[in-house]
Image (tube, rainbow, N blue to C red; front, side, top):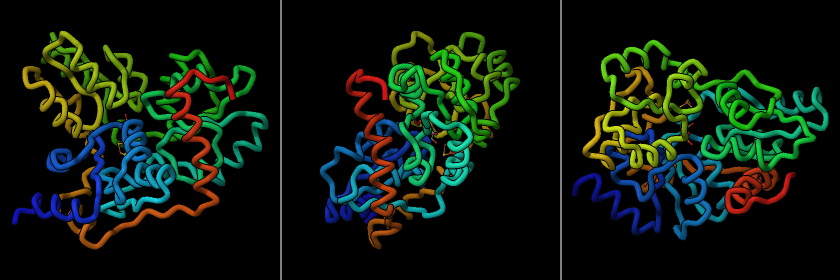
Length: 308
Ligand code: 13P
Ligand code: SF4
């Protein structure tokens, strides 16, 4: 039996669902029940009827799934698949920042640990960060935004709100340089440029559209452009090509490869289901506090509820 068939069989036996991020390897995206961005994956994790979630992504994503679905078994096929940006701030560092800025609200990017989310008022993803800063947090409060200073800069420019910043960044998006985009534009003058808000301001300023990975997928379907330069992690190009066979895609930089996203392989997904590893656990105290910040985000996604 082929590996993919073995995975399918075990998935049925375990009543499992496979969730994959848009940066995963093509063969992982192709076997997943759902492929999406951080926001879409959180919504799927909260609503699935499966008993087991095999999370093909990085640790904070699987942890968010566990926070939302404590009764389910959440598995991360490679336990070392972490996010260096999420590791750039600890709960202790955030507590110290809060002491320095009493009364400030904390808006945390979903790329954070459960402990950091537990210290936060509100969570956001790159898909909804502008809305969270502009519409959900009261105007009278200062906002501490952690950990991504580039996303913070983007949100600030779109929402008109200033932030207390933290010096975190994504090492993969930092590899995309303005000269890369300029070179690709020279090679493909008709192409549209899409960039992730984790890119630097210099790269974002060269883009026609700045969006989450889910937003990029929607933009590419709707735009009349037939060629697109993609300034984010290269894994998304598999999905873009699959969904838009008539269009051409060029990575802004071939160096924008997240090694952590590439740790998940078909073998590891199979072993994960076979051995029920590596199970993600979150202590109940941290989970309940972290859940508050995620639920406020998900509620605000559904309604335009008042300031907090
Ligand atoms: P989105 O897929 O939510 O845009 O985020 C990208 C990311 O940070 C994954 O590491
Ligand atoms: Fe973290 Fe960047 Fe990799 Fe996303 S692409 S998991 S933000 S290091």
